[in-house]
Image (tube, rainbow, N blue to C red; front, side, top):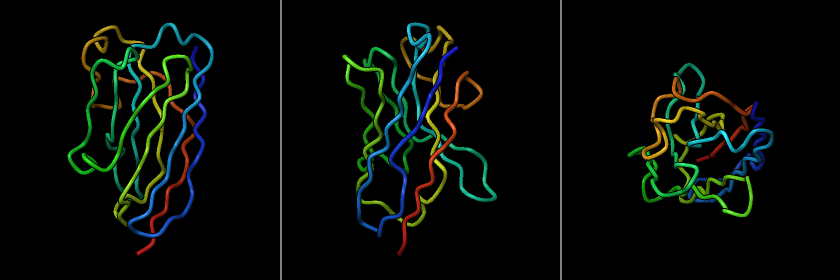
Length: 128
């Protein structure tokens, strides 16, 4: 089992920045990819960003490309999502996820169905 705990959500004005953290524990050696997803009220959970656990391949949703950065300190098991130039439409609950599926070794999957472990979520609210 892998446990994921997110930190860093909050309220920020449009144009501001936030950094989310996701601390992984447990069988982290079984992780092949980590990702961030978000879900706004009345909408489906959507992909935001992901990278392979080795950080050799990273993918972003078009809506956040150039504004958000996913990263991980190789010495740690914490994954970050740096969010800059935030917009009101970025308002959502953000979830960290990890996949133990080996096919994610080279390219991380975009669908939440491909992720096995999830954090509890953290609210991000961007005011206009």
